[in-house]
Image (cartoon, rainbow, N blue to C red; front, side):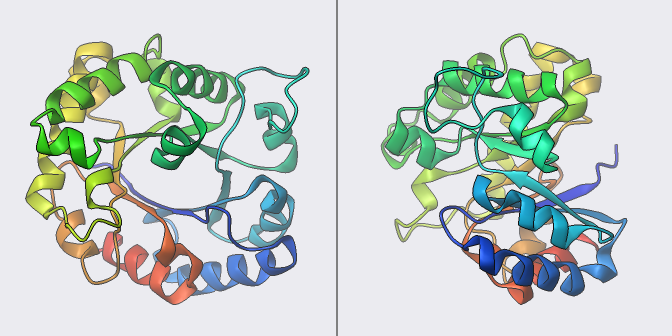
Length: 254
């Protein structure tokens, strides 16, 4: 089946609130030609969300956040609830990013709690999974991917999948000097989809978009996006430059 491509920028801990409007407007202008053909999302630090929403108003760009807590409110100093994000105008939220797992103790179980909370609140959850260099070299690709899908998406129903995007991050290919080929990326995406099919059914799994999050750039986007199970990209550094981000969106719009 045909799945609409989705290109989402992950700004990470970059861009001040005072700088946000200019970047969002630049992205909106640079990607206007792809409006309606590609879902374009800027996932910003939580403090930037209000400014990003205001700048994106009336454009084809949607705004997301980079993390959320699973509780609606309470004594969780420093956390951001799904209700806060919705109130600020966010439509998407990233959960389980490899940096959250590496630096902040995220587990498959906490990723699951955040994802289910986001979906229940009405946000679209971009759930990140992927194996490390050590796991890849040990031949554990299938084991790791299956575990992360099965645990990270536990109790996510077929109906919930309407608000689910999965992002495959080959952690071993980020900042290591090694590159995932389009065929390697497709292999992992196909494995994710088949594992998801066992959870929610093959028909529903075919509707879920799976992004590639391994340093997609304008120069390699077309080859990656041509693969059957690669439905978009979760973009890091290139999302901070409107022209580079637009180049990836243009490749997705073909």
